[in-house]
Image (tube, rainbow, N blue to C red):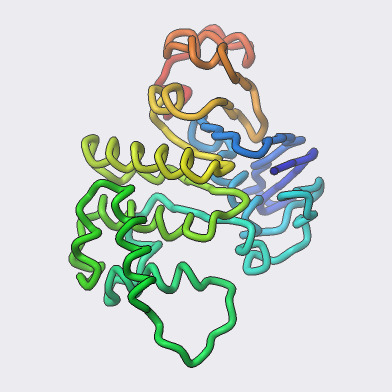
Length: 264
């Protein structure tokens, strides 16, 4: 479903601020894979997601989504393949609009507009059923303004909106980092339910090593713009934080490694 081949990206080339953000990055994800991504600040995690989403062009290499070469496509043309949730809970929703209006916009993304009622009775019933998945009681607040919701509720709604049309690839960029631990746990549980229900191919960046271990069927650790550690299947199920740190130490060739060094 996703194939990244030998991608390079350098910011501010030829200046004192030159930064090689991605170097010879390669990654293949099969349909239905749920991959968690960890690594220190500057490891290239968010740069990788931005490269996939088309936020900026890559210097070289190739990116394919669902068999379609999107390497040279602008961000808006890749949107039909991708659902994305950012770290900031305020980014993915329209605060002055109702919950049902936000969902209606998400449901019609990429479709032509016609002069028909924006939200039908059938739409509302569908939205209620979808909102029940979040387990936050929002199915009973369809006409509430989104701006009145908590950060966690807005982030959960953003997640639902990003997956309504079942994208080929779901990108989660530290989508629980701005939430308190209790709320973050709820949003992560909702994430797992939605991903499993729709069998979505998902790439999730996290700074929490335990979340990286507990969620998904595969874990990758990045450092200096490339993948150092790639663990999947039964090996991932047996992982512990200590074992993960050992893997990083072995792969990076450093004897002085800690969770603080890895996750900054």
